[in-house]
Image: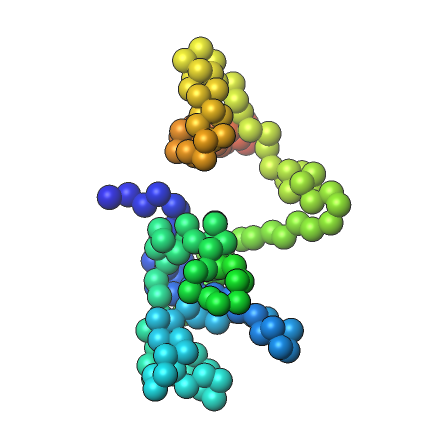
Length: 169
């Protein structure tokens, strides 16, 4: 069965992901490898032993569940009410990196984010496709995002084809 979310290919470190942590007392925060043994009595020796050096590592792989929890910000396993924030390990064991990211902050973050991107090509959203798009909007209002995902996949494919065609001319 295909994944509902774009799970990284094995070259992108899908075998483990970092999980954000916060210390309410000290105010410190950071990321540590997600581990099924974290804070398990008699197994996890944090904070004396760092996760990367622990003999009881049981790292958690990226999955649909992990991505869904990240997108919803849910972490029912935490008593402090903090959200679930998954990260990525972009540098591979061989030192290569297959990852690019950008961070946009401030008052004009949306305009900054869009500045480097081509405008989405909605030219193919006519007739039946337009009715599907309107139905997808209604479904999204009811929190069913599957139809909108399909519409945007098609729009993004069309946009990428347009950009590739323009670049080759």
